[in-house]
Image (cartoon, rainbow, N blue to C red; front, top):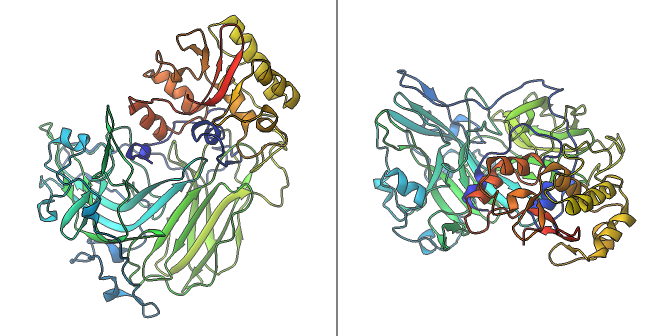
Length: 575
């Protein structure tokens, strides 16, 4: 995952957001579970992404909390001394002992000393890879940053290679100018800066935390890949290298723009973070305790899972997204174990594109399995987040999943109800039917393909795909396998319908009409064309921003091409 993948996701969902996404942007072979959640009807509590521009009013403050704000024990607000790497045992609960430190190579062995990412260079704030950490400090006295929570991860397993982002709770306070982008996490080891965080200036937006969401909380953002190890291309640098396992110091760095127009940095005190094979961890301290409950094996159709473990000396907090929302009415299943059985964890179901919580449930920490009422609403389709709105310090382990209601059978219309369904395109209501095409012949073929997909007519789709013949997927697969019913997790019927009736077709320059048009040179920088791809569920907003910024490849999701004679030439990821 590139740093640009941390950008925010789409605005209000339309007809197909997300379920198409796995087949669309992840290349063939990825597994995508799908379930339709209608957003907006059940709203125990609604939160909208807040504007965070801070004017010059004295005392104005921005509370920035990354996805995990588990307790005050990790916060320099309450601790005058920073929690340094390798020393989490001074304040460890008596039932735990310190784990041995990972033994990876030094982080300096993988970074490029003296390298400055382009977005950092543009700010002119004096940060560079390999700089002494003693030189990393705030450049203005009108802003401050403070880390207040644990590090967390969100991993998307939506088809193709998994991608992981990181976050940490923080406060950013200031009295001059504004902070319009999320803060980042800057990593150091042995006194040397080894990661300057992701590019939050390329479309990232402020978001509320997934854990400990209080007040005006939003997340400090990071990638699992260091921005100090560039891979050079002809047009821009990319980042593909994770930091080695080991103990690190992490600081929250915010980028306020002052009244003068100059950029500045607000840098927090360091906190300890450990990287190991299981991910990134903060010291547990005195929170949590022994735990006996275990997260279950992944269930068929499971969409999202959140697991918090504070039963060892290092916190593990991980969300995993497995699938997109298409049909049905899912439920939250959860368990919580705490040293105080009276504790309660509040969990919210969140639409990432709008940062709205559309359902909230309270999970007792008595070790008994909790199953929510069905989550119902009105029409968005995308991967969703599970936000832990409050987590008492006594909680030792918590897990929650969003998945189809096992007691409801094939709710939601009887198709596309999980990892596999009879036909994922059954009953869709689409905005471009007939398909929008600049060529009459291509439009006629597109209509025939769309009609077959919407009718779940396997024989007709196979017939249409073998007439030219059509190149299906990369590497090529037989039409009989691609359009077999019942479907596999790739949900090709839904993807084909979404491409042809969720986006506009355009001539790519050789007479071939392509859906979506953003895949053509003419529309590769069109706001409307990129919005179509997001609203159709082919990309999340963050992925659209990242692909748009990639001047070499641009759009790399799924597309359909039909030539001027009406021959269906291909259905695959962008060639």
